[in-house]
Picture 1 (cartoon, rainbow, N blue to C red):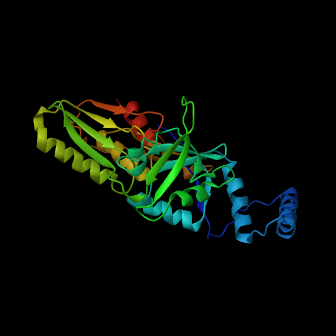
Picture 2: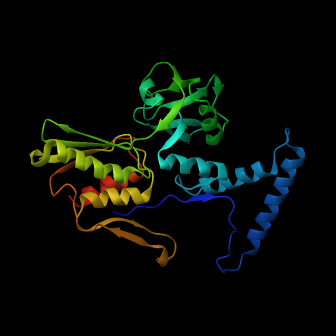
Picture 3: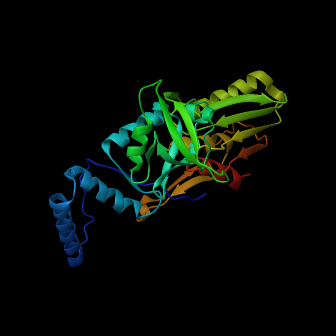
Amino acid sequence: MTTSYTAVFAGGGQARSAGKSVPANTYRALDLFGEVFERVRADYVDPVEDRKLLEYALVGMLSNLDPHSTYMTEEETKAMSVQNRGEFGGLGIEVTMENGVVKVVSPIDDTPAARAGVQSGDLIVEIDGQQVMGMSLNDAVDKMRGRVGTNIVLTIVRAGAAEPMRLTLTRDVIQIKSVRSRVEGGNVGYIRMSAFNGQTFTGLQKAFQDIDKEAGSKIIGYVLDLRNNPGGLLDQAIAVSDAFLDKGEIVSTRGRKAEDTRRDNATPGDLARGLPVVVLVNGGSASASEIVAGALQDHK
């Protein structure tokens, strides 16, 4: 399977020239940028920090390349790192920004959002009565975070619903157990994977051990449930795919230059021991989930 990877940039690094001469019109455009920057600093109705203006410019530049490229501030990068480790505070919603409002990619299993009935595709239009339109995604996420045990009211527009819904959620510490498992019907191993964080592959190995301990040779196949799994770490998606495959390409990533091409192939050793595997996905399955589902589909 071939996929393009998400390009994520964080501040703090130093840009380096690729060695090509810069066209004169590029310098003219940069001069124009400087003029607009100074005009906003001097004449905009409210004072704005220089750092914020530059961040807005970087966000606009990256977001217009494709839907998967983004600029992340140092604070956002740290928050993502915490989330990828599998524990963070909040409501338990994976979100994105769409047409000026916050769109739910998926609720995370066993979190305040999931318990309140938040669904993939819901649009969050108000947070505690304040309209989301005009906020950045980072600002909206910050408003949804808060002290554990405090309440927050989300106004949600849902496809097919006649009126917006107001849901009251209580903030909690979100501990993502990304893999859960059980034996269905005495002979089918069911594995639920809700995210791809730093604990996912280890959790998958334990899931196989638990299923084998409970049912052993009675197992006739497995169900891998990736519904509403918004994805996560690429290396975990590769490791999970490899766990079900003996050989073949899992995923390839390609950049502008030939040396940027990377191919990841499966290695011998199938934790499912060649038994049938059914993969469940839906509209909330994205990113790393698509890589795993695609790799298993390609090598069925």
